[in-house]
Image 1 (cartoon, helix red, strand yellow):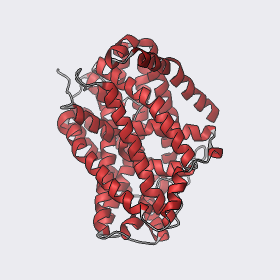
Image 2 (cartoon, rainbow, N blue to C red):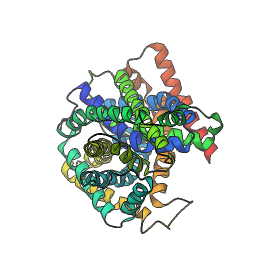
Image 3 (tube, rainbow, N blue to C red):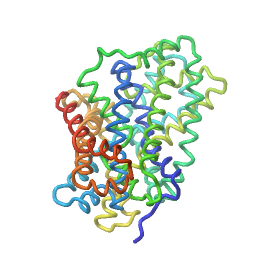
Length: 437
């Protein structure tokens, strides 16, 4: 059976950017940056994104296109032996991420409904914090929105690469950027916004620590969707005429730009209204409604924002589900429809305890973390970096001739890329992980 392909380079870049931008840039980046001291973390994050992150993104694109199959099958086809374990670890990471990510996607859906009925339109930070707390601790509604979000993800993936994933990315990503720019401008013009910009951009190098480096590395991998094999799966649908290096730079640049725009959208509002930037996963949901309340037609902006945040979440969840679904399609010849339905049901079930972490299971903690936080930490800060090490070693040592042919780099760039894959990336990732442990 002939493998599906992207319809165009633009479609591939926008779909890949959709996979990387998502909630990692808009939901997670602002509060993780705040918890790690602002500007210093931002610099470390950008440095890791454009070195280790870009290297692994290129490696995944190249391995995927060369193998023309998903993560597990690519490591089996090109490497054999124990190499498929790297693919399986990536699929496990993707499964864990999608399980809790779908819960957050469901929150976005819930907040879209609250924007429509006007419940989010408030100037009172305490009232908004209470609204968020009541919603996520409810034992039933977040599970319902989690199920609806998984159903939306399932629908796009079942439609296929060109008619589902690519078509969605072409519409949703440009719309998201336009709205983010509008909201960023409004946030920057609020009284007291300058203090928020300073908190976001001014570097405090006293905050640099092994724990901060692990968080920056985990967020860089989470934001670029590398380490699990999502981008490898997307690369497997690439035609031979598309230049990988330029495409990877576009995706990395768009992801980083979105993270910075999100910071400039959230931090000034946080400072202007005296909120806590390190408030954790609920920051976006508790901060942005106050900004909307100070805009003409604010409720319309609130509806548009949460709708587009939902779409951004959807383009990322689609890439994660595609990563997992490709395994039974490539390995066991199961139809796309059957594979998507079965995997989506399993992901929903795994997300149930994550959803209940803020209510019924709030008191159940392991290593000081609830189920949601433990899934996030295990996937983002352990499994994704380990997957990154495996992918880099595979690209640099096992399949370098194929990598070199796929990337078509100049000799100096080839030498730098191979050094990154063989030694620098695995060593740096390992050192950061060991330092944290």
